[in-house]
Length: 454
Image (cartoon, rainbow, N blue to C red; front, side, top):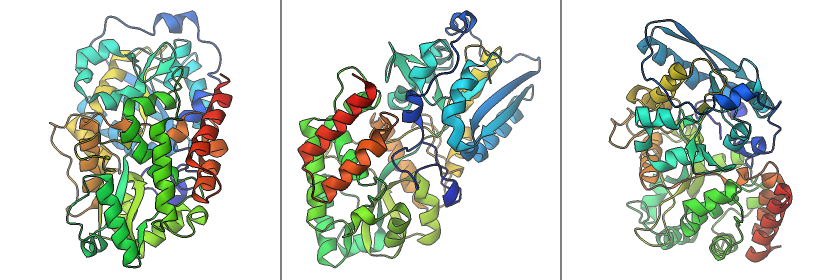
């Protein structure tokens, strides 16, 4: 999922125009990986002898990413090369809408970049195109990072989510619930709810006061947000993630998923969502929330800068509460960019040093300055954030979710077409009252199986 909170709205990847894509991880999973890797690539894919020393000889690294991440990448490059003056990094940025097609070709090139945006870990490992980073993880101590910060970049036997490490993130997205502080006080909410029942109680009070309990927009599939926010805790991060990663036998058609869909359908039927939920897009939802007529707004970090501008000091944020107090806290959270090292790179040690830098205190500050959540340990110094900014709440929520092992990929990224073919239209039928929760999940799973041809 690639969105920069400080970018202008038209350039925010597909979040505001095609919510279901939420980055292009799912699309790449089904994209052709380009020419078959040479035997040399496979032979170099698992280094056993690595070094954390850059030495004194000049090194030039090539980096490939999407244009939407240029600001954060340029800042990271400048900071890293200042710290390591013998290293020069030359970036190439493709338009975001072609990275899905071009990234596999970059990996398979005879002279690939040394650092490349990894869209699909499984596609990159199929022919030995990506470097297995396990030796570097041991050398640098990356395994000490919260497991959920690395799980999306691991692969074993063609399935992501576990196994060896093949990429490392420059930062993360974060989802949860924005809330209007003034309206929260009006309904008696002095602190974020600890359970879903408490959340519903506040929404009921908001409705009684003539307000919208939760600003959900489903013209582009935003109605899936509250469903997955409930599902993450109910099914557990591992089961949801395995479904997104296409693990054998994985299914989204579970009793927990049906219960989550039934709950969200009930919220809509009870008038807790906008009356025009299926006609409302993200821009209109932003405007409705900013008008001071909505209590909660399920969305992500990419809107924090906008809300700090339109509603300065008036907005807070918290992760979706679990069903029971003390239960699993989880949220959808993808990488801003996950950088990997192509097997054919001749500069693996220097490239790995850049990956290590991504979780340094300095890089964490750069990530937050650009609207993303920082990689790294909770014990590290907290990045500096403007007092009163909602971004501070988002960053704290990310830390809580990450520490709890609750980072989960977006279900809309499970396959290339699952968002447009299933999640969006089926959620519209569900919230429109034309489908049952059981049929909703049955149809989504059927289209998932059809796309995977299994």
